[in-house]
Length: 609
Image (cartoon, rainbow, N blue to C red; front, side):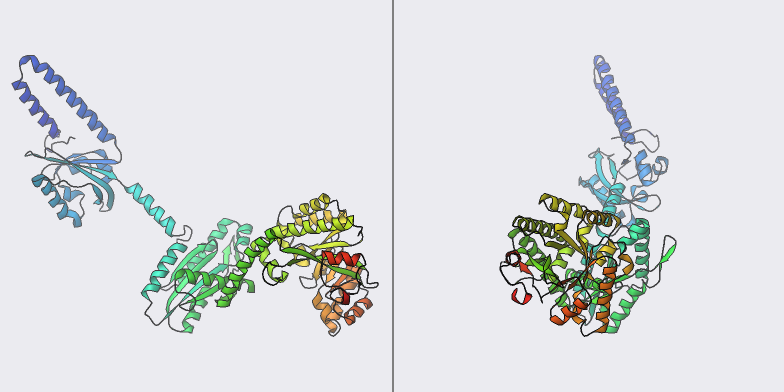
């Protein structure tokens, strides 16, 4: 390791080597003089190569200091790292150049201890001072040459850690904050909230946690693009921060969800004021793609300590309340209630049970006949899914089918229903029951799955069934919301002869103009109109109009939920085609239907069990 003398500009170790060489020349015989010269030349060449290496290392700053800590060597990397040229640094004290004031006394003492007592300075990470005054992170290693002489030289080898520190800061930010809004992420929010709760345990106050979910944010991304969606999130963040108190916490916890914590609330009025502020952030339209767009969000609120004692519980319960608010529609607000959480836990358990039920054979199809309003003859059968757990009472389809739709299990469930109905129809056809059609219900979620109608057609073909053997029922809302691909698939089935009915007619959008565009063959009047028609003129008028319109469009009309003779008489007067309900038959397992079709049991509903 070499440095330059502040006065001569020569490396101090060069002078030392010259002196050593001269001493050796004086004591060696003349015959050895050439050998000494060779060794000296090799040494100088090696030193020059080492000097070149030092100057070529862009991130390794090397400085040399004499026993008084004055600069005798300063390489180019030191200039880049600390801002001083070699000329500016030469002869100046280490502590005056790059040592921060807080470290000054310690550095001087450490250097003196090494020179006087041989106590080495340990390598370590430091922040040294740039010429501009800014701090520079380095890993600094120290070497002492001539340690036991009168002219010891200390060399500092500093490795620039700026890039590593910056990368560490960026990684730290990425793991703790949202890159788009620069808000804390969920993990950081939880940690900060738990600290806040711990510090406020003894106060006579409460805390509110608000969970905000932007309504239909996916549609904004799909229609306007992700850039506009990002713009919305940034602008909403700015508005929320405008109303944020110093003690409040806010975080973005998913693509379109935020959580806000409001501590130190004393009265219910304080809570409502802060919730109003959150809603106020959404009150003004957002300018997206050059146009004003009204944006809403559902809010769920959980309170500490009533609804949770830590951050995770509060976030979970506010999320539960928010999900309940979403069922109420756009911009809704809900406070957490324990029974909501209990119901959610029960639903989660039911979904797991339903999946097991598919594996363990706990599901079955029952069939409810549709009979001619005139003759009472069985014309068709509607397949209805039943769940009879191995332990416990039966579970209603009204409860488990919506859960299957929300969880995605409806696709597996739907495939099972189609396969089971086709297999049963094949068995009945083989036994000579060739007249009755089986109708199955398809949900909107099933139709959204690519290839659903193709799988239905393939199942018919696999079991050797004709299109007239299996029909399908869809609600009018499903038809109205169906995309072009689904409607084209339904039209193909329609033209092949598959019967397609609109179920629960009158309870959805009920836009009659849609009827002429849909590939349907039948209308099923919802039971709510049938039930009240004898006593309610309005329901009677709606039911009569539905039958009239259906017939004018060439559609078969089925009335659901017929339970007494008065309803049946009214429907016959209106010339309804088919009747379905307890007055004639309840849903029955396949074995009971087979006995009924074979004439082994009486045909009237009062005797059908």
